[in-house]
Image (tube, helix red, strand yellow):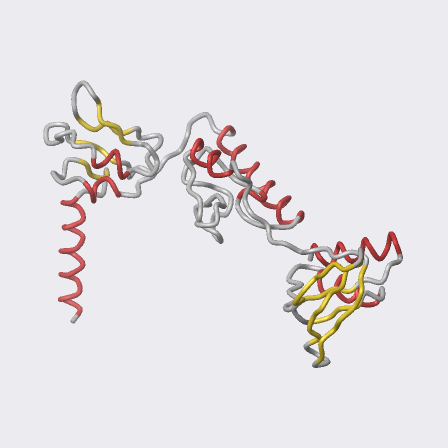
Length: 247
């Protein structure tokens, strides 16, 4: 879409002959297909095919490209070539994400909790993301996401008390050996080993009830409140009993 917009602006401001080379055209948003049709009505030449070479000779640019729909190779002289390149995260995006304790994908974009159901919140409940830090997006999508992120943050300050899920981790300090496995596995930095007592301590306000620490603890000293091993086994026994009676 931004390549189409550039073609429109060049045509509108300079009245130049514009050739738009593309392989796949995806005008996916509201009104985008109409903009694409408008581009063609403005006299911009839409050519489906890959550009093979851009060469300079005697101060002039020459382009060689495919024309898939007409089944031929195009060779022409042009005054300017504009490349529609992909977006990449800034060089310091990884450093900022590490400072905030946020995850990034293998491209370097910051991770949200869920792309569909929770696209602005991060694993740190007090940090919301919006715009190009999450991935490539246009202005309308950025504005919509920014409004959602602002609403999430404002909701934290609209209550006198912070609501939290009751299933947070708790430590049986009589059993805990202070091995530190729970601290190293916690993605939310909610568990720390007290250096003096040598036992794990949970910050319940930060804990997100993922259960990774409970699954990692070799001695079983750390469990989720209202979801400990005994309760889980009782639920399994009841489910198995109900299943046996039904069958």
